Length: 117
Length: 111
Image (tube, rainbow over all chains, first blue to last red; front, side, top):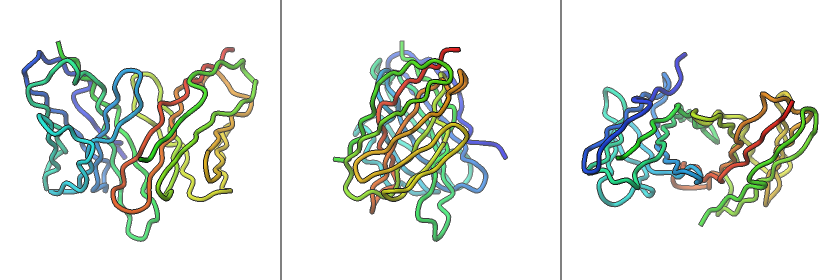
């Protein structure tokens, strides 16, 4: 049973370019979460999605960032016109959201390390 | 605002030297507290989840405990392979399922 798959593992972009980060959840998981880890900082929540729906985007910067989780295919975190401050590790997690479960564990991928030159 | 503080930031132990990591939290109604382990260049790996004060969970050399204000991760007779950053996170009742993380404790176990 494959875990959460993120690609690419490393991404280098120049200022002003677009970055697209992909996340395929674990098999059977329909809920996806994106977190960002800045150097010397803890993981910060960005967005929570179900298939075709954004449930909570309270942690997303207001501009340049967007996320989607289409009916088919992986979840995508898109950063337009990247700036140096966007350099960070971006982690995706998924959970099964089992009915009746009091708590759903989030399982994390290995992350995408974005470097903006 | 929900908040998690972990201490110490870094901890060096000799192999076999037991110790504890602390996670203090403030949350508007705790739904669950999570412990993860993170190795360099990798994503967090789930260890434990605790739901209510007084609860304890064990896995090999690790034991997690929970009170109304904090959680401890006890490491008994650690080995070098236990070296990692240990992350604590809370999830609040109601609304989103987002996790609020502390900055972690970096544990180094010397042989």
